[in-house]
Image (cartoon, rainbow, N blue to C red; front, side):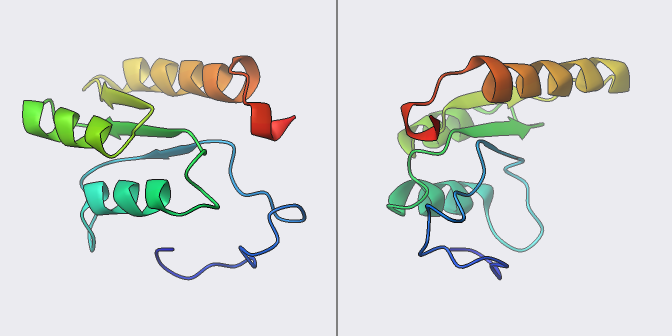
Length: 104
């Protein structure tokens, strides 16, 4: 995977990983689409829902994100209170409402 892992990824029963990944396409050292591609190409993380939350509304970025199997693509609102509400709703949906068969 990307970066340094603090847990051994080989034991997914003991260390199941995140229930959802939320990130921006605009990352400082690596392209966000490359991060997405790696997450979805790894057998241990490919089923993990990935939500892209970014300032880019470019058709190319949206198409590439879904090509690499993003589960959702959201353009960040500029207003902070709208962003706060969005994050709260995302957390509620992906972590409380969404049913993942591999997380039961």
